[in-house]
Length: 482
Image (cartoon, rainbow, N blue to C red; front, side, top):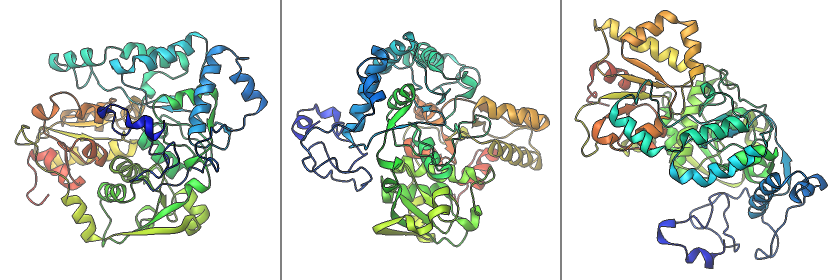
């Protein structure tokens, strides 16, 4: 869309005429507020139409030789690539991950588009994972008030679920925003090109796994999945993965991962940070024991800003391979010390008009919990409750995770799971952010969480450090020094 056309858009459309994936608008002019420069300049004359080169096979698909539906898919994907000056289309590996998970009325055109593909017999190049549903009518939303909101607000959920089943998604026990955990298994090898569209999964995948994906819009990732190809630009290129920020973490002790992630997101916005000072807490590579820390920090960078890739010195794959050679010429520096960490934490709101005076529920797992997280929290809460001589905790705790991760704990620690249930802990496979954004949520529930992502999207949910959160779970009171 040209600047002239964007100027005629209705006021409510905001900046929909431009994109945060490139530093220039369609007329080649710099976009204010964005500094990310991973997209390559299209050509000398930015007003001239751009067409990426296609192979004969790709042109044949475009010309309809594999059916009209796949031809439409190809035309959309190519137009998307042309808009960003993509070099070419590349073959995808691993598996897609889709963030089309809300069966709301505004999704009807998208659902119809993909139902047309499914009816034509199209499937993704590999079975794909999907974000969790917005609700859980079995474990949480099993009351008349929530059910009314759900069935009025998500009238097309059945149609969306059915489309996913036809196009190649596994059963809904595999639905999770943390598709990369072992129990779900969507964890492509480093360097693999994929097309994902969940902000925290993109962030973790690019950074901790070393895969290559852009920040795709919901629907675009599924179109690429049906085609088995995606345009090559941005975070999928060597140039686009260079860091334009050096972030030095110099706290006197292990930082609060949610706070420093939020600080980085605020500062670098949509840039690529190279982060130092964290390997002393993480070790020399990404493991099942430390992945939750990277997940927490990374999701905060993506929610507070628009970070799709970060590097941690001596830890994440790209940083282990290239070190500080990843720093681009002219990079900026940001230091996070104790004072800066405290300053950023102090910006988090602590009150919200109309909500209950004391916490009523605790939410852990946004993005979805790993196995080690639900194991650790189960142990911590049940031991704390027993130590206090209580039969149960003061407020219920919702542990957001896929059913597969929950089943792992049930099989491995059945006695602990029994104690967790008595202590008021519940497993739920829905989306925590969607639950926190439910109509009337703030008026009914005073939520506390250790998720910076939930807090960034819904400031009515109070963010707390883990030790303070445990105290609230047991007592129902916010510690005075929290």
